[in-house]
Amino acid sequence: MTEEIIIAGFGGQGVLSMGKILAYSGIMQDKEVAWFPSYGPEMRGGTANVTVIISDERISSPVLHEFDTAIILNQQSMDKFEETVKPGGVLLYDPNGIVNPPTRTDIQIYTIEGARLAAELGNPKTFNMIILGAFLKVKPLIDMSSLEKGLEKSLPERHHKLIPLNLEAVNKGLESLETVEA
Amino acid sequence: MGDLRLMKGNEVVAEAAIRCGCDGYFGYPITPQSEVMETLMLRKPWEETGMVVLQAESEVASINMLYGAASTGKKVFTSSSSPGISLMTEGISYLAGAELPCLFVNVQRGGPGLGTIQPSQADYFQAVKGGGHGDYKLIVLAPASVQETNDFMDLGFELAFKYSTPVMLLTDGVIGQMMEKVELSDFKPRWTDEEIERISGEWACLGKKDRPRHVSTSLELDSEKMEQNNHRFQAKYQSIQENEVRYEMLNCEDADYVMVAFGSSARIAQKSMEIAREKGIKVGLLRPITLFPFPIKQIEELAGRVKGFLSVEMNAGQMVEDVKLAVNGKVPVEYFGRYGGMIPTPGEIVTALEQKLIGG
Image (tube, rainbow over all chains, first blue to last red; front, side, top):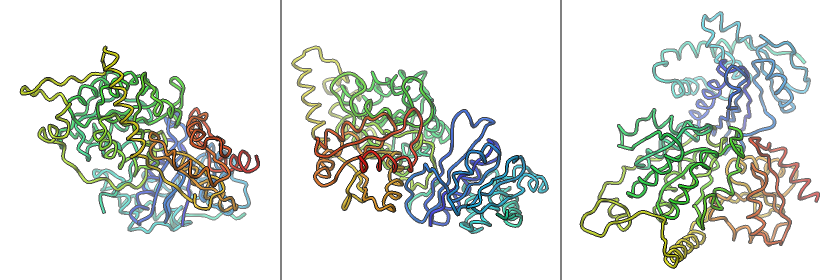
C-alpha cells in the first residue's frame, strides 16, 4: 500500500499541520511516511501545500507529479492540482470559496463543508481536523487510536487538552463527507 | 528500537549533533537551513551536554570560530546554505590546509549569487572540486533521507577525525525541509579532556606546558616543506579514495541503462526507475553516497555491461563530468536536470531517459 496525497490551501488553514498529524499517525501505525512542504515567501498569507506519502514500503521520491488523493482548500489550489490527480484517484474539497468546481469525470470527487462545520463547532481552528476526518472516511488508512497518538506526538504538551476537541472534529468530518456524482 | 520521530532534515542535523557528542556549533542563519540553529537554540544543549551554540555575526566569523575550536581537538561544526558556504570558502581552504577535523553542512539552494531559496544541487563542483584555493579535497557525504542525515553526522565526525580533514554534508532544501520517520541515534557523551589528549594530542593546541607548542596553521613559506605537506595531503586523499567509497545500487544486476544520482535527485530518480520498469525499461540506479571519494570503480565496472548512463542532477550538469571520466568513453553518458530552484519530477526523468538514451 502506498498513498500519495497533496494537501493544498491558504497559509493559516492548517494545511501543513494536518499533513504532519497524518504523517505522525502513520508512524504510529508502523508505516513509512514522508512530508514535503512548499516553503518560501509565498507561505505568508499566500498558498501553502504539502505532499504526504504513507506507505508499507520504503518511500522513493517525496517529489511527485501525480497523486492518489488531492485535498483542495482554495480556488488557486483547485486550478493547480485538479489535473494532478491520477485517473481513478480522489479529489476532496471544501466548496466554501470555490468558484469553479472540478470538472474531471475520471476521478472520484467528494466535498466536505469544513469551514461551516468548524464554525458550528465553535472553533474555526478545528477546520483542518474536519477535513482530515473526511479524508479518512474516503481512505481509512489510519485508525482512531493511531490518530490520537499522532496528535499527542504532533502537538506540544500544553495543547494536549485540545486533543478531545480535535478528535470530535475528526468525527464530524467522518460523518459529513458528501459524494459528488459524476 | 531507538527513539522514533517525525522530523525535518534540518532539525535532525541539530539533534544528531547533540547526540553524537558534539562540542560546539558556530553559525549564521540562512534559508533553507535556519532550522539547524533554531533547533539547537530551542534544545539548549549547553544545559544538557555542555555543547556551545553560538550565533556569529557572519559566515566569515563562524568559519573562523570553527577553525579556532577545531584546533583544540573539539568536535565542532557549522551549517549554512549555498551563498553562506561561498562566504566560508576561504576558511574551508584554511581548515583543509591545517588538516583540522570538523564538519560543514551545506543545505543547498539555487544560485548563482543570492539566487533562490528553493532546493538545488548546484554546489557539487564547489564541494568536490575544492571551491576554495589550493589542492585540497573534502570528504563529501550526500544523505538522501532524513535518516541518513542523522546517521551521517556521526559518520562525518568519525571520518573527519580518522583522516584529520574537514568533511562536508552536502544536502539541499528538499532533504532539509522534508519530514520523515527517523530513528535517532543514542546519546554519546562529549569527549573528556583526557580523551581529546589521547585522540588528538599529537597535534591539537591543548595548552600543555610540558612539550613543544603545537601550531595550527596552513602557512608554510618554505616551498620544499609546502610541497611535502601537499604530498601528505595527496596521500591522504588517495587513501580516502581507496577506503571510504560509499554508494547504493538498485536494480543494476539486469540493467540495460543506469541512472546516476545523489541526494534528493536519487530519491526522485528511484521513483522514475519504478515507473520505467513498469514500462519494461530495464533501468537501474547508482547512488553515490560519498561524492568525494566518488564511486569510480563501480561506474567503470557497470560501463562494461550497460548500454548507457543518465546523470540526474539538480544543476546544469556537474556530476555528469565525473561519470564521464569514470565511463571513459565506453558507452554514452547523458545528463538531465532542472536548476535554479526547480525540482525535476519523476515523469520528466522518465521522458529524458526515453528520449536521450534509449531513443538516441
